[in-house]
Length: 451
Image (cartoon, rainbow, N blue to C red; front, top):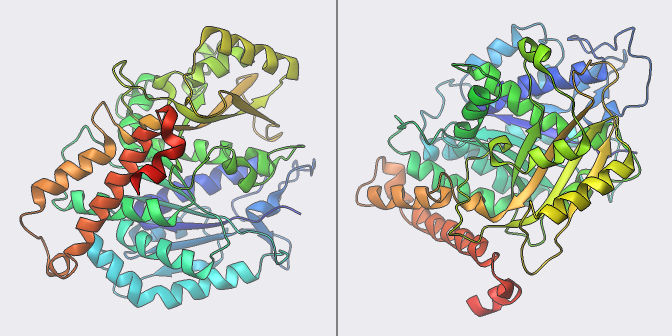
């Protein structure tokens, strides 16, 4: 029996991405917007029950909980063709409908007031999963740092307390670093959220709008990518990362097995992703031949990675672990030859204290969606450069911005919680230091030296 996954969608960004994600899953499993299996979807070799369950009339309902403090995005979803797909009891909107106003402390404090109502929904959804007592329920949270970050941070802490043996994975979208934020307290929002992602999540898949916009512009040739197009890109990554769960083979058929190989130590759990080939409907005519070697080589190129990290030659940044999920018509002997070629060309630099190998999972494609490519691939990688961004450290940017703001507080709640940002800064700095230490041969003894 598969391990069911309950998805929590938080805030504007989380619900917009979640909407695209469920559209993608419905298309891949031959499910209509009303949750009814299409007449052509007769193959039956997929596992819909990882993300869906069946109602008494046998239509499929997502294992999803939709949460927001303001109603605009959820109302848009409920006025779409997919309105009847979701369980209305799993949708929570704040009675006040005012949102958090980009104020982390406001979202966090509102979470404290409404958490009982939210966890009533989550508990009911978890109790309805057909699981045996030793199984895990992975939770997937999607939120952008400065929108759903306060409420999301509160729920992350509570999820750890309430479900201590369950796997918590998040897809977290970082703001565009190329644009000046109009949110004055964004340094606080970033630091306070990063602290919870460090301490309360088991795995964080990092995506940033800088890289997503660059890929949409350079790779998909979209001059001005819309939010919907960016969200479709994110949903492609999310669905591809779960293909081995929904179309299982002999290996990598549960989320724990996928993640365990990528995270050798608990704190180094921030992952980056890459995907190739990417094409739009308009670009199908320019499709070229794809091979396993070509796909695996392209996945290692920074331009195909969904995070804008700096990998300059003065640093020793390296891969901690790599998992490539290859979809399509693949001969296993091609995989072996491709790995050998990559090793010979030294295309990937690995940590000096661990195995230098790329893991490969082969996955079937959805039989209901046509593909322009014979082979496609997703890379999930743990790389020490996740602590940097073009080329200044992503975490250090937050630290630097925080220091500039430390001399004055923006709200009364930040005055009352003045020690919390300082402690968050310390936690994030320790994470940056650990990623730096992971590039050295003596990392194994780093924790004891720290003490």
